[in-house]
Image (tube, rainbow, N blue to C red; front, side):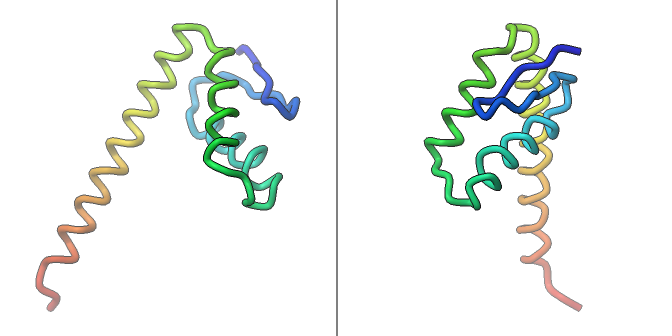
Length: 88
């Protein structure tokens, strides 16, 4: 398994698990700065991570991201639908 580094120097294993990347980004960008980071801060860190990935690694993480976002979208839509149903 290959490892890359965040701008903070934290090692990030590229094992195909999107949640590992998301958790590392949260810890190093958001939590480390006590939730005072900006959209631009996170976008820069994500770009830094993506630039270190090979094309194959990018494909794996894009696929994982699209899957996760599709499931989240479906759950949000279902939740909105369920709220519209009459309550018994």
